[in-house]
Length: 248
Ligand code: URA
Image (tube, rainbow, N blue to C red; front, side, top):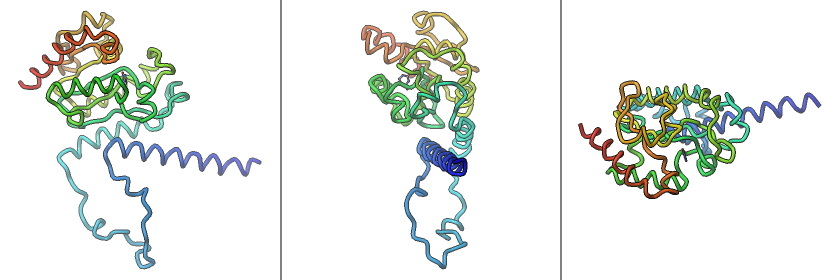
């Protein structure tokens, strides 16, 4: 019995690591070519599959240093089990976008759609966020989008303090790696976590605060806007201030 279970556990661990690698490479926009079948000639055994690739120096892009910094954060996060949310999540949602973004949006936590796809802000609130970004004259791929929590709280309940405490070091490192020119905190949890304030979002919004000397604008969460369309005017005022800041 024991003999049968060990290889099974090892296989499960291997599958888990492969899933994690594929997810991470996808998030970082790296090639997933290792998932495709390749024909290997007997003559190639022991040599690189594509000698031309092996001979060519790794392509250097101007982003490489920054991507590797973010990549390091993603690697350290791994298949995170630091809090209990790992038990109920389907996919960990690290964040996505331009690793060299001038503007980072920080939301609360993944919802059901994000949990299913492993990507931030892809549900109804996400579609509204995309519209806001486009109304700012930007493309979604130009900014970076992430959350305070990387895993979905069951039933979309509010994040617990211990969950925020486990996840926050990774958000801090993401923001350090990207070092944007402005941050937009979406909703109460993002504003409270980043600003260490407990003031209502209605009081915090409408003016810049400072996060590690980076201008931070708190505004209403897009999910709140879906229920309270009257607040769209204030969000538009807030994002216009961000646009002005980015033009400086
Ligand atoms: N709400 C959030 O705060 N984050 C998401 O990624 C989606 C919805």
